[in-house]
Amino acid sequence: MFKFLIFIALIANLLACQSAPQKTASPEPVVESKIKQEPQTQPVQQKISEPDPQQVLYQQAMKSTQAGEIDKAIEQFTRVVKSNPSAKHAFTNLGLLYIHKNQNREAKEAFLNAIKQNKNDAIAYNHLAVIQRQQGEFKMSLFNYYKAIKADPDYANAHLNLGILLDIYLQDLPLALEQYVIFQKLTGNTNQQVEKWVIDIKRRIAADKGK
Image (cartoon, rainbow, N blue to C red; front, side, top):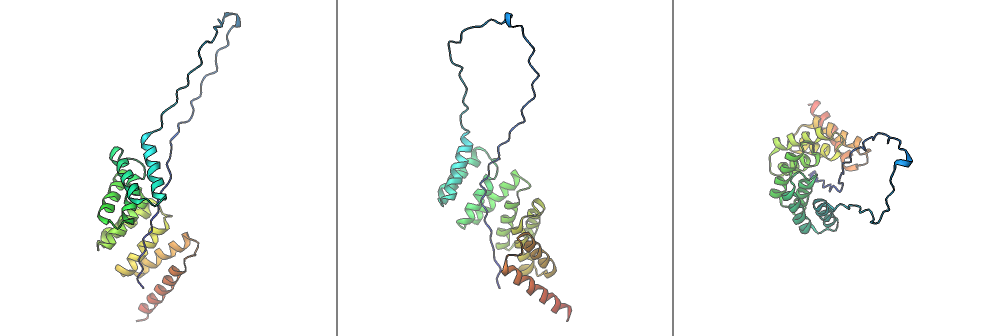
């Protein structure tokens, strides 16, 4: 059975960094009679910060993605990465959108840029490996699946895709079985199709030993 799976996971989280409030010293006591009271004639003006245009555009791109407006989302994410290449997950999301349109060349470039910005982007490694597998670059695909797993050992889809590569394309049944078993453990043994693959590989390994 041809086991071809591509898992697309769109990321919708924007992380805002907040610095911890600094501890201030207690105010010195004052003598009431020495305080000069002045009438307040003007209201205190509170400065309201303008919204970050980059964050606004990123949110718009996410909304377009969720609405299924893929071309619009691609245009918006392209604007994000042009003005701020280090925007978190922007290149990865752009690559996933290109995959949705079967534009693998553009997707591959986006994932490579995502990895340049973040060496621990497991999703970018995983989907880059999927494209490389499709293009027959099995060694590079193997390398990047392992990079995805190193970046996130609990990334179930990377284990599954690695298992498929080892099983179908590299014919390494023991290692493929190992990856399928890890995937099943991470997903609570809920995937019946993968369970069939596990049983099939165990049968094939036993048959090879019996020869």
